[in-house]
Image 1 (tube, rainbow, N blue to C red):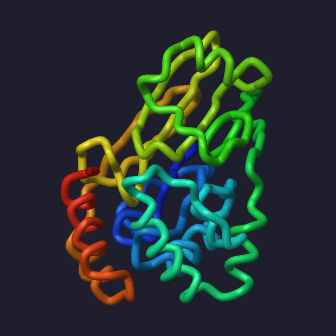
Image 2: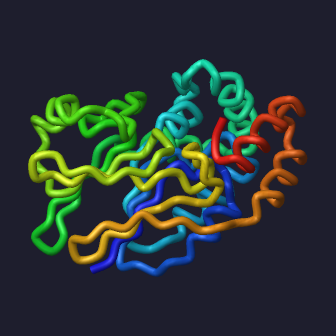
Length: 232
């Protein structure tokens, strides 16, 4: 069995379309919207896929429930502008869909138990569990978790960690990687093996799309730099 694991698409249609790997199932770990120019089309792509499990990210929650994304200070202005744009282009049904996605999902396949969440195993949408988090904190995060594999997004940093028999995986970000590598990041689970993969996409096409939005030009310049450089 092969599972494609994607997260943090952030309205980046070119990056999403570049992830063409076929799989038996798809896990989407949230944040389909904000920052990028094509939130509606990204949502349509994900919703049109078969055998797909989707959980809610903090940006999905912000748009779907008209709440603050609670981003870090350096991304807050970008997020607020992206949210305003996204809320203007999505209809009521699409916002309702985002706001009512599950926060934690457990999937069982082939005698394996998979936990899917955006920020933390316990369902905190806003907690950043980056690759440098010590084992002791991971043990605390996982103490009430019964799963073989835990899939998380949110940080935009890919990671595979083994913590007391539980494999914790962050596939990185499809649409806005922040680890200094400006390529779409995702993960493949296949028969118990995990691989982080990267694929190039047309960054300039997304920047051109951003220029067609009502996001202020100085923020588009910052977003363009993040996309070209893989973070800021």
